[in-house]
Length: 378
Image (cartoon, rainbow, N blue to C red; front, side, top):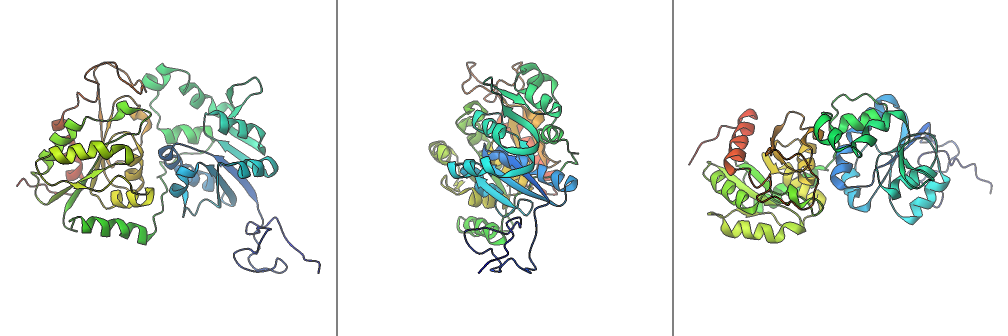
């Protein structure tokens, strides 16, 4: 039997029936590719999340586009259930081989690292924007609009002192798209958000509580982004004097010991939410908070994405690049030392260690007041 199949349909798989279980001939679901776009944005997870506003800009400019996003497996959960993305691929050998064959109308290559840029160099696309890997052996910008983003990696003065653009402004400019202060896109299913609510209820949190999450870590690459355990202990004790408030400890596996120390040293029974939660469960916990206190790390981006107000502190990284969308306050360490992006600080105490719990506490009161929360002291 000779079949009339249509491999140009976005639902066509080839090795098995499509999700509609229909043969191609006269299929009502036939939807041919019209404009194929590949986004290469692999890591880190927080960076992948803060790149998602780009999807709205793409769809405004290319409303009938078919979008494929290539990312690391660690960031896969962040992109799931995203209606703007037609296909998510993880960075592995099978998909690298696939992308040597498949053709695209437009490529956005957004990482400045060798594996991503080398792949971008070899991908078959009619137009390429962002970064690729030159045959001479170095990364280079593909289009003139990406020169500014490229120079941010070469000039400390530009990145640390001169630049006032957010990360979103920079990547929209790189991609030749109009930025309309587009928000992050992170779609938790209702049952996933409810999981966090049930989990917190089991830990003693009730709907009428003011829930404040203290995210105590900042990853291992830039350990200097962390505030001291002593700072969190002092802050937690201050917050405990606020009526009807529940204080949560947040973090990942790397914060297990740190959170254990904080829980032991505070003067009340602080709620430890655990350090082994999946990204989606961690997100659902954050999404059920009224405010998050955090450094420049994944929890900050998850709070922004779930529209939870934040008090965010910055020391060695650039606060200018973070867009809070009017939902929070930035506390910027300023002791004459510019952002350094160092993994270890030679100065004791570090810029963030000099930040007082009183500063953070006052910022929390300000943010809660702006969101309509009246705070009473016990």
